[in-house]
Length: 100
Image 1 (tube, rainbow, N blue to C red):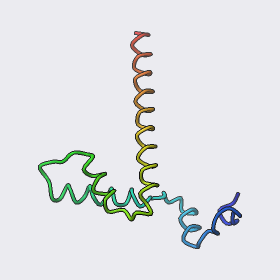
Image 2: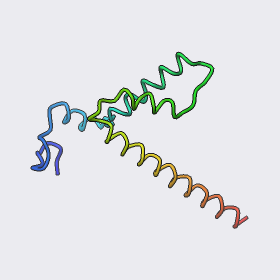
Image 3: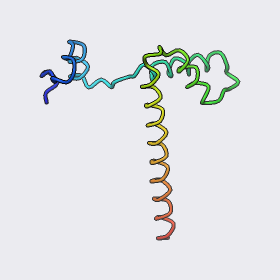
Image 4: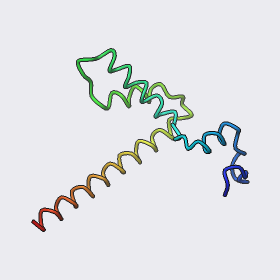
């Protein structure tokens, strides 16, 4: 389906949506935007260091309640994707070691 043809199940695309699609701009979720802001804040205010989960906790706290379920889904998917990537990397390493 073309980006310019409305899908009956979804709201019609706005002019902004069409421009973003035509220019192949990545979609940034509210959680991603707040995560980036939280990381910048922690880097600026805690140059001695911080734990990665502090970034996510700070970002999650700032989300409107209506966005928290989507953020949790995003976090769960990201965790799963990282595990899958690790498993593939380990399998490649093991396959390479067994050939050597």
